[in-house]
Image 1 (spheres, rainbow, N blue to C red):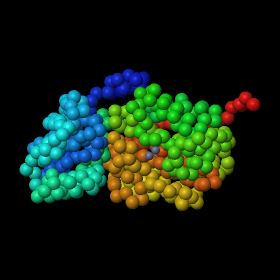
Image 2 (cartoon, helix red, strand yellow):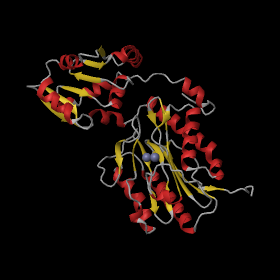
Image 3 (cartoon, rainbow, N blue to C red):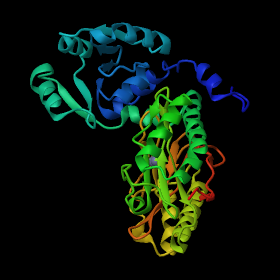
Image 4 (spheres, rainbow, N blue to C red):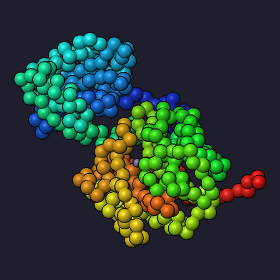
Length: 383
Ligand code: ZN
Ligand code: ZN
């Protein structure tokens, strides 16, 4: 267990490899419903989840009795080492020239071979069907491993929480810098560097710093625009720790902002708090979306909230469950989701506030903790 007095550094050093052995039986238990005898896993995050292997090239084959990780010569040692540390129990097979033979022989006698429909290319599927697995049934599957990944284990939560803490600490350090008129790109670069200095492997996605009018575009890329007094600045970013992502948005008012900007801040902050308050086990994800949306609708800005309320976070920055008006997910204990309503007005810029929370028996617990007070006080600048 960690305590508050531990520094991020000490806790990073103390991370033990995640035990993954319990995941394979849970995956196999889904085979009957999916009507498959074997599954070829091709998504890197799914491969990592099942085996602990982090290389960029690999294929996992799971049959009723067998479990293989197939990779190439570059990963011979890494694969063996990571499989040993994770306790996955997969048989590692390495070849740079005969991967086809390894994959086909790993599938063995299995008749119905599942592919990850959302991750395999059309050309690979066609090659499998006409050449590698001619005469067998190729079955498209969706979300078999992703379904297992939804509910986070304690060791996964520790990592997401640490990533979130690094993001919190980085923003606290960098906040005053906004008063020095950096460009969006400069601020984004320095924020990323601060997260890395604090121990992040990398940012969990390309950091968004969108100031003034740029804020009206929810996914604006940092530009060479200088951040000015009177701007709203939307900062959406996260860190990766041992493969796990964090995600947080804060909107900061640099100096005095317009009354409309102030009202946008108030409304979005209230909508976000209402959304977080609605997160609990058993609630429909789309209900969380509806709660956020109704606050913004009441303020008269229904059309200005142009995206879903949130998404799951884990090995991928966007994963199951989606939290939007069309989501059919019901939240369960251990889901890690974001709540991130926003209002975007071309003449005034944008406001988005986002926390990552974990669903608990009582409701939810936020993992991101940066202050939501948007005010950044001006200080006299030299003439
Ligand atoms: Zn975000
Ligand atoms: Zn997000």
